[in-house]
Image (cartoon, rainbow, N blue to C red; front, side):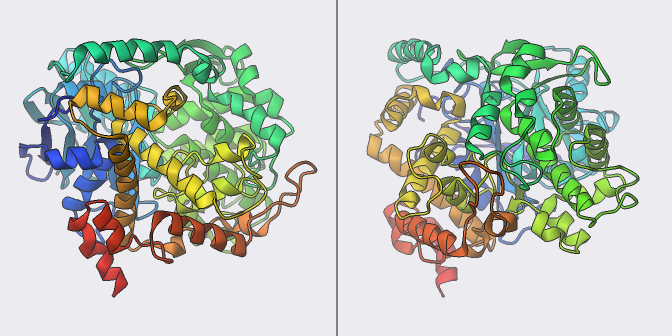
Length: 619
């Protein structure tokens, strides 16, 4: 077997309580690397087409990568969850870092496949070769952090690592996430709801195995080199202000969606900037297992109505809970983030849902009575806090909002659909797609719905490498190449924040893979693996009925031009532009005009065993 991999996959049948281990298919390891690549492939093998996301038949796959458990900077610590998303009905995947992935790998597993549904709430306790299903009824209703403490106490070991859901996951809130190490979330696409639908409250892991690499001496030299790179300019942003630095950058370009896309710039940006956060709230900065960068900015509120609140803060949640809702108070935003962690909800989606509800309220689509007496005007921080609590508990209006903006808008009706900012049912993130045309394409085709982390295409626009206000041929290849790189990052599971330290991108990653595994992969083969994983994701979505019709953009992006005076004024994306961008992208991918991978493309990528899925669509 290749080094780096544990070589084993654990199967847990929650219905029967039985578990078994099978060897990792070495061909899969080489073809799909690990992480989300391996996860999506295993999901396809273990599920039936058209499976309901919240039914016992939808498997939940937990994976690590080939680098997990080593001392590689940021690569030792990640894990991924893959399933069918209750939001998009297509690929659901989310990664998280911290120390949970390290522990799972050291327990000796590349993946865990959870099937079925437990009769009553359980948590799975993986202690190297011993796997037990333990009663979790006393943990129900607890936050992920409290669940983690309770399990460690119960099992008598402080070093056990835990990934758990909160009340939102138990109540099948569609934006529920899975939280490990107290503040680290596998956030997007509703993986926490899938976990909750299985009556699985938590996964606890302890591992004592050594992870061996093929070439230890050369590997350690490489580790040292990357430690130095991570202390250099490529990661300065993450070490100093962290991602909240983006607030003023995006605001200056007028590409920061504000008040549910009613504006592209926020007059209160200075008050909620990374600079203001650092000055007044950041208490310390910590790092994950094996990381030389340290980006986790822990914020504490020292006074006022939210005194004592503590959480970590990134740009996206800060934007979603702040500018997107017209809120310019950092203490309230920190409280909002803390509530998302407490209930176990994706903080990006949660903020976008509140912004949507506020828009509906201001336009008279929802009344104060509908809102359970909440005066949900943009900028009302008390309304933000109340709505998050209602969503986490599925109470009152929160029960509707907990479905996510797509379904909530359908239920509310009366024109609410036009105010729902999502792609494939997944809420948008902090980039105004009306004036970032490369990003707009990346978001439209992203296999997990609206997301900046599937392609990083916003970088071309924000850094001025292309004319961000223009849609033109050539953007398809830019998006494709970045996507292929990003799927590799998420299959190795190294941190996206470290991507700038891979100066020669593919060459550096191929070298890392070979030093760890002992494989003799070429850079070209690695490039192909990235492309293969993106095609795999597309095949997953095609099998579940998604296609070109789903590669769209929200109504406001295509019908409501930016009104703010400034560099982006008047920008929006027309149907013509979207069609041009999609055609260009599908062509760059070698897919049909409907966005389906061709038989020839799958053959070229050595994916012959999946051809039957695309052949069905060609009939």
